[in-house]
Length: 402
Image 1 (cartoon, rainbow, N blue to C red):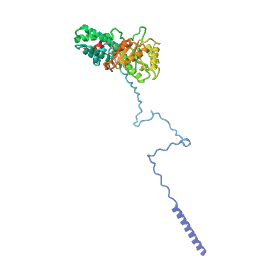
Image 2: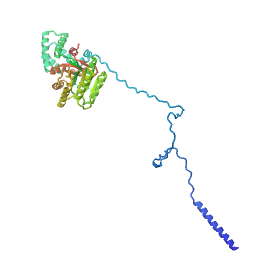
Image 3: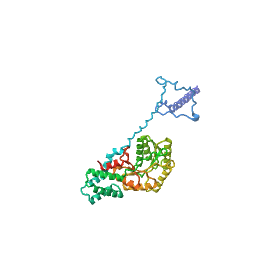
């Protein structure tokens, strides 16, 4: 009996010990993690898996855009492509007629030439024309760049005619001075710009001159003169050393509908001139104007190149005109330039620019005497139609006024 009781007591003790161990282990067991929070909708989507981790694509039928309804339930509407509107070409200008241009510009010319004409009339109107007065007449003519030899000739003729005339009314003096100036300038010279060759078209005109004389502008204005007279013109931009020169000449041409031939920058000027004449022939143009580089007359190599341009052009046809552009404000320096150019190419005519900006109208006499060729055109302003054929009578009338 005692043995049974002892066994029961031992069993209870053992069970109690086991129960304590179980309860203790349960207290030390960590709590399970909290349930995951809902995903952050602002987080970027997971990167797609590639290679072996890539998901197998789901087989779904593809639908065309016609089968997909728009949100409002309407079918897609085809959009008609609108034609690209081309910008209109700039209108071609109609230059004003060349006839009488110098007469219309007379007031502009006379304002700048009063020092010559009015100065001479004032001196000749003195009651006593002594040696001092005649020296002042000479100084006035020399200051106006008439030149030494022409000045001496004019003064001698004036002294003789005034002595024979006796009385000197303002009207008589004006008529006397007008006659002598016309004689000095020359009324029997052919001042027509030759653009009509005897054999076949086109007429070929080469424009030469140093930098700063307005040569490219003059070429563009001459194109307007020719277009105003009913001629078709092709422009050759043979000044390849200045990209701006070719752009400027092309702009002048576009304004009057003249075609411009140009080459690469720093290319061969003779090649451009050759192509211009060639295209002028193919197009049946009346005139080809070739604008050459503004060469310094002291650069021998550049002057030789100008001679090359002339020789290459003449492989097509002889030149009809070689116009030398001179700045009227340069005075005697312009004569030096003229002399050097005349040694390289045969100058046939002179264009005097900026004649409205100087009181030295005597340069007309001096340069003609130097080269033995006539002044054919004069520039009297910055306007597109301010290049006028030179008319001796209108020029002298502007010098001495009414």
